[in-house]
Image (cartoon, rainbow, N blue to C red; front, side):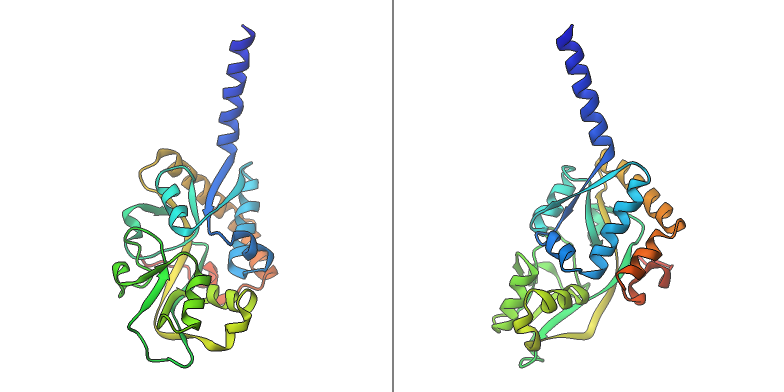
Length: 249
C-alpha cells in the first residue's frame, strides 16, 4: 500500500512539474547573450519569464547548437525554439507564437571584399528553413555558430555570412571586438523577419504550450510588461511589435 501511494504521488509530482515548466531550446551562447545584454534577446526572455510567471509557469533554457535545438523541438523533447524568425519554409514543421519583435536578416561581408559572393555561409539550421528567401540552404556553407562564420569571414575564407543584423552587431561589439573594423553589414537584399517562439506543429503537448505562451504574451502586453522591459533595455523602436502591428506571412 505504501509503495502504491509513493508511486501515485511521484507521478502526480512529475505531472505538476511538467505542467508548470516550459522548456525552450536556445543557442549555445544563451547565457552570454543574457550576461552581455544582447538587447532584443535578453528583453524578450525577461518579458516571457515575467508574463509566464503570471500563469504560474516557469521558463527554462536548454542551450545547444542551433540545429540540435531545432531538432529537439521537432521531436517534442523541448517545447519551443526561442526567438525563432519567421523564415520561409519554417511553417512546414512549426507553428509560431504571436510576434515578440522584428529583426533584419542579411549578409555580413569583409570591408576589403565588398563584392565577393561566391562562397556564402550561414549557421546550420537543418531542414529547409531559409534565412533569406532568395538563397537555398543547400547552396550555403554550413557552420555551427555565428562566431565561427564571422571568423571565417574575417580570414576571407568565405565571401559573405548570413545572419541577423542585430545579432552580428552584438557579437562584434562583445565577443569578436578585435575583428569589428573588418566586418560590415550589407543592407542590400536584406529582409525583415518577425521573431517568435516556434513550436512543433504535430506534437500535442507543444501545441498546448503554444496556447499558454500566446496567453502569456497577450497578458504581458495588456499589463504593460512588454513596453516597460523593452524601454528598460532600450530595444530600438523599429524592432518592437507595437511599431509593426500587422504581420505578413
